[in-house]
Amino acid sequence: MGITINSSESIMLRRGVTGLVRRLQTEHRACSATTITTTATTTKPAAGTVSSSPKLRVHQPECLKQPINVPSKLLMGPGPSNSPPRVHQAMLNPLLGHLHPEFIQIMDEVKEGLRYLFQTRSEVVCCVSGTGHAGMDTTMCNLLEPGDVILIAENGIWGERAADMATRHGAVVRTIKKPAGDVFSLGELEAALEQHKPAVLFLVQAESSTGALQPIEGVGLLCQKYNTLLAVDAVASLGGVPFFMDDWGVDVVYTGTQKVISAPPSMAPISFSHRAMARVNARQIPIHSFYSDMTWLANYWGCDGSPRKYQVEISGGLGPSAGQVWRVGLMGYNCTLDNVDRVLTIMKEALHQ
Ligand code: PMP
Image (cartoon, rainbow, N blue to C red; front, side, top):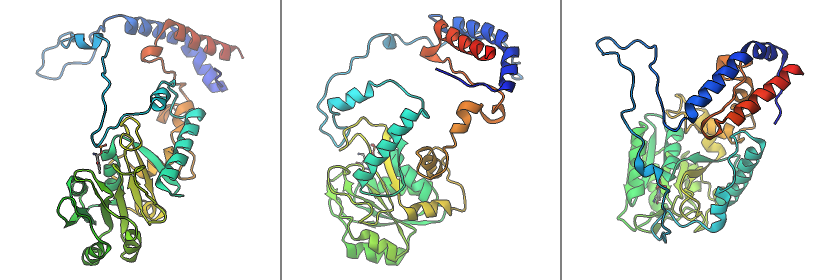
């Protein structure tokens, strides 16, 4: 492990190092104790409340002191599915920081895999943290601004869910409906596009509430004719049936890792076409959710050709502390005397350089 410290940081370190030693060692003692202890703060109590030392009123749960017992189950519902042993094996790898070069390389490789899975050459391919719902929400909150018309082809629960989400994002929701189990023909979709002239058409490829498989081929061309973006939910289908994002003219597609892909739940792979990103970049109002903002996600995943903005924070301090403070994390499992000594040794070495 090596760090580079410039001269102003070095002066600051000289001044701060003794205090830091004391503080790190004290904090280590506090957090390595077997039970959590709290100390009275100097904050004044709010008017009308009685001042008292805070006490632990919620005790350590006994159940969490027992080893976890997870039975092996055959998962034959519409997700999650069982993961193969090599997926479990991969999860045993050590943790990396979110900007370690090795982690960035893994993200780049995941993007390549997703391009293959979606059959796209789109730059913007990444994963949203969360389940399939997170992919749906990310689609809605990026593509829709209040007052935009979205047309939802509804033939089961996932179309209904999409309508609910779009409404929450202030869109004007129009639906064409079919009985559960039926799918929509190109003619029916075109008639609805002509009638509603929506900004977005939303289809579910595999409506898992009934098992209906909606044909997607041909719909992209229709959407382009009506200047509409095509968004497809492929949560229950991707990997199981053919999907050709570019050839079919799909503008946004998302899926979930715990279905056909057979990984644990927690990620929603997603891709935005050039047209979809143009719409996101031309928005009048900011995307309501920071966490699902595709411009940020695309930047973090290295999809927008710009340097990753996170990088500023890591070596230079955060916000006003940039260039002034070296941020050292000695959290949780890493909070050991050995690690405190290690940090101090490295700092001392740097000061003597
Ligand atoms: N869309 C479809 C078609 C689904 O089948 C599901 C889940 N069954 C979802 C979205 C939501 O995905 P998740 O449960 O992973 O949030």
